[in-house]
Image 1 (cartoon, one colour):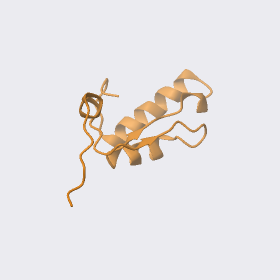
Image 2: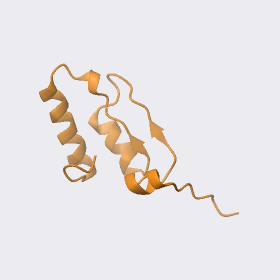
Image 3: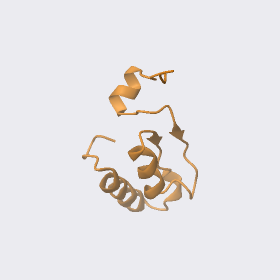
Length: 75
């Protein structure tokens, strides 16, 4: 039996291979987890409220991009 392929406009646009969404969990959704889920073909979500300052969030976004190889503006 061949596996079913889950494909929508959104999954194609975001490069999601598997219909798995890692929900935003405060203090847990750090760049390492988000990148691991994203690199495995799911949708990783970084939690903004984990960071006390906009600069902290900017650093987390930059770290996530570095871990996923995402270009600026693609996430």
